[in-house]
Length: 423
Image (cartoon, rainbow, N blue to C red):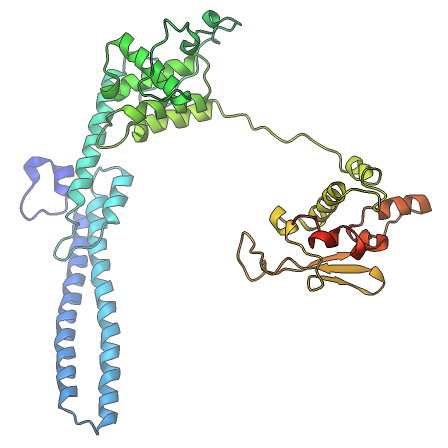
């Protein structure tokens, strides 16, 4: 392999030698190590046969000698495995020495190095398939480079390996009319092309747009080459489409495309690099939750319809309890809904200073760990630091265990058996 990539076809021989003198010395040392380990394995095999034969000659009464031979055979088995590991390491060492002298890309080298060790071969017989696949990929890149070298709308830069889509030089036309927006999907019904498949959803619209573009270029949609597909995706990006929309176009085209290099079009390296570059140039906007003020929410929970507790309906009381428990415990919704007020799952401390809640024994949490199964929730009484009696009474209504002061066990919770009133 090294002779083929470094010396060319004229330097290939049945017994190739390492092109570099230093690597040749390392290869010879690794070969000697492998041969020595192989001889040790052969002698060990003969020794194991001898020990097994000797054990058969012993009588059944000689248990001590039998036990000694069994221990020797067990130790020899471990020794044989270690010798095998040494032989495999020697083969991988030779494989690394030969790969270090090649001009193959690093991913191809790593893939060849990770192939299983085959007896009698430095490289696995499947290495030729890996090299053929790499050669086809290189030929495809060269073809794309030749086709896309002149039109700057597809490839920007001299390297095809670092393929990145370009941003449009000027913003697209904007307007309220379909003609100003320039989108094919808003053409009149008599001018709109039928989608390639029967799908009437978003994917069918993208496939219809792809067919229109191929028809204008005189290409077959199912066999359109990769450079032309990239030109179409770049044209959609120039019109101001988002990266996610361009990805939908690529997926829709790949659904009916016959594929490239024995694989789907959407997984072609150049298409993947294009979509990756589009996401970097136009990252999506993250919709964040609107900000809210915690003191305002807590103040709202101290008035109606949440207070007084005896006049509150079950829904309002459940919402308030769920919010306060979630705020204090940071538990999941399912874990909060599983909290029970049955006699086995609810314990009040003396004087109502705190209470202990357990989930229903039949509840299984999302993450099954010994710490999360049947985990107790301790709720202590809220002690406000306000000096005003009115403020203290108002803040005490924010205690999740305040239901004890309002005949907790006689409230509507007992009708359902759950803290949040969920049957």
